[in-house]
Image 1 (cartoon, helix red, strand yellow):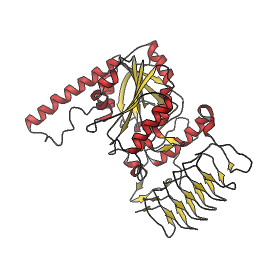
Image 2 (tube, rainbow, N blue to C red):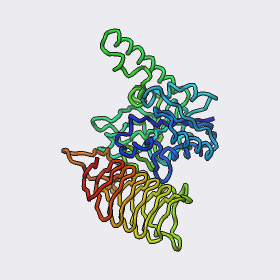
Image 3 (cartoon, rainbow, N blue to C red):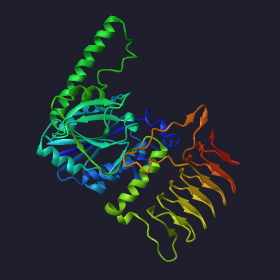
Image 4 (tube, rainbow, N blue to C red):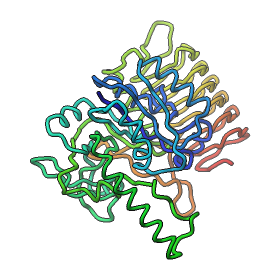
Length: 425
């Protein structure tokens, strides 16, 4: 018997995902046509012996999350439950707090997946590795170049046994080109080190309060546990943590730009996993170039040219002569006749007028470096907005015959002219 836990965070996270996270919790943002965490759930559901999937986070269980959970349970015929933290507890605090629910039924092991990663999720391979050599912690690792590895948790392994000898989260100098993917397989005994951290946090907090060094409001609490710093770094080299390396697709989804890149990776993956989700060129239909997802309820004019790497959501209207490439068009948006949308995300219910152009600048990994990853994007440099993908927030109105280039338009804005390299408040 197996279980899976997906760590979805909370509203205090995902600030780099704004303005898109204003309208929907980041884990439910559509990537390649389905909510971000549906890719995780699909992968977990395919593992033989999977009995339950738990989502842990600090989001209020609103209507969108409730509907998603109900739909997921019906589609995958598995219990999918949401466990809400009483406060943000870090990457390990929720696991310890809900340990009884995780261990109910005595699972052999449980997967732990961060919601903000894109991957082909080699969970069966991780399970095989775990069963060959059982240890409390198995981490999924991949490689990055020397410079970009500093943005991730870095792993030094024994190349013969794959034991993690040293672990540093976002080091200041080069440690290793093996990085943590944020996908794990834990044995039930993995919760014992989390208990030790909790008890140590309790003692430290009581001591600080007794000495008057901390006020109760400023102390994060004993329940806050960081898997990476409090557990992995502490236990590395003690024969408890091992790494399983993958050369499959992987990327973080920290920003809108990385969501667009993740959509491209998943659309390419659909060729193998879900070919039925990819649009095909048909007589009298729009011209399809490369991998394109079109929701069945979308209305697309036959003279439109779509792709590559395009995702079109529910109820979208695409007019005659539209050119759409490397973009996500969300629920209820309208692209009027002869618009051009490149490297952009068009928000829910937004409208782009006739003959207008919405264009961004991609921030993709270096295609000539097989170890390159998405850079941690900073929106500003020297007080100026850097070129990046263009984002139209919810219910934005773009008039006819204007250019929106490398800009972010906040929700409910009605523009009257062109903009370049601006955040439009």
